[in-house]
Structures are given as structure tokens and as C-alpha cells.
Image (cartoon, rainbow, N blue to C red; front, side, top):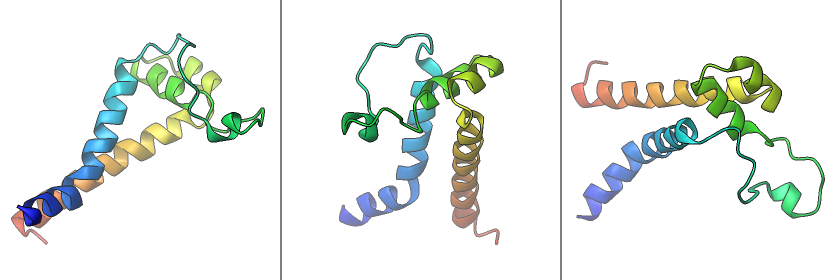
Length: 102
């Protein structure tokens, strides 16, 4: 049982976490501003947080509103590309390793 849990964690945790995160961002309303702040810097009293609007930006990208995405956070499109690329890379690596193609 321990080997099965270790195998699943090692091979699928990152895929699942990133996929669920992107799915939740796709389902969220990017126009809402209520909710808890998750920025550690703002919670420590700093006025600037480099991640402010990143989730909103990715949510706007899922809706095709690229101008709003860039306005929410300039790094949103890059984060979306990096997360999506990482998910596809991990899936392809797991597929190739299971089928021993390489």
C-alpha cells in the first residue's frame, strides 16, 4: 500500500495540483474582488505584491479577454503558458515512461 501511495504521489501529484489550480482559475469570476488575500508580503504590511492579479489574469485568459489579463498582471499570460507547458510535459513523460518508448 505504501508503494502505491508513493508511486501516485511521485508521478501524479504535480499534474493534479497544477490541473486543479488551472481548473479553479478557469471557473472563478475574475471581476470579483472579495475574498482573502493570499500574498505573504501584503500580510506582512508591505503595500506591493508582485503576484497581485495573477489569478485574475489567468481567469481572464480562459475567457479570451487578453487585454484585461495584461491589465490585471503583466505576467499572467507567461504564468499560464508555463503552467500549461509543465502539465503537458509531465503527462508526456509519464506516458513515455509507462510505454517505454524512449
